[in-house]
Length: 441
Image 1 (tube, rainbow, N blue to C red):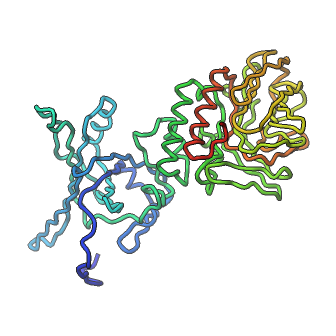
Image 2: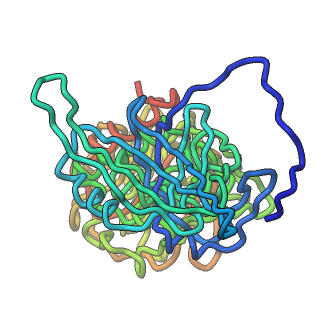
Image 3: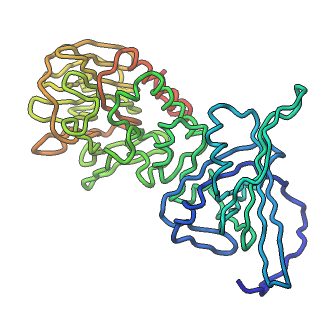
């Protein structure tokens, strides 16, 4: 870098902003050093390339986090560098924190700081930072400090560079960055990391609550695929991610010359003509839990009304059918689960949670929200082909009976009990209600 100045700096008319940092993000130095394609412009990093990188988020209360950059210059030796110091305080250390805190103490890190003006700066870029001091204390009186101080230091050639301003959440403008927070369950963290366009903090929190509920109720472990179409964004196919195993059996939209509108936090809708979603899930070859005599298929609909000859999701492979149609012109829910014997269930609405479950052969249960109907038929087998959503995949001829309802989610997996179907409905309705999009009264 040259020593030329390009401009001066005048005193501003107002004294704005406050000191301190509220959040620190860590990543291993070697992971950062592996990044290629970093772009800088005007004192900011505007692109971190394409190599995926995880940043681990640590929030702090006010008035405890700080950074300092101290220059050391030797005119005798012709050298100049900066000592960078980051100080963080975490209160009420828990057993679950110890492994991470020990890693922070031992590791070599690149650190990003978020200040109270929502500006992010990068420290340790040249050589990383390491722990150099701190203490874990609990005072004698009730109001004394109880927490851990950690000081990390390192040397850098230049002052900490800024990051390009984010839109709504830190680093949402860097497609290769995944922010890992203790706030999310391990299962949801994988889903969150898979989203190019991250949901806002409130939506992500609601999604995490949904996942935690499904895990706690034993539902998550029974599912093979679970698509939440009611995403905040679908700009990079966020609504098509298989939450159970992101990257495996992710769905795709097939327009076929038609259309499939996406409405934020509501879901996707077919056109009852050409468009559909291919789940890319073949229950014959891709199933972990779905089986001939233990199977479930379900969804959440935001569109009511009678529909003539439409199936909202399914696969037709000779006698081995699985399908679910919500409300016909005769007010019937029509469904099959690994058989060729349609259950015709009287319904009054197509809104909300629907599920079809094969418990064994011949036991079948069908759910209109929490209303259970039993309609038995022996199982014939598991169809061999991809399950379509917003229509049915008829092996040999493709899309049939397309639907234009708006759907917010879809799932398939092993058999769910009545209690689990009720819990599933409650958890998903709570998510929809958190966004003021629920339809179950």
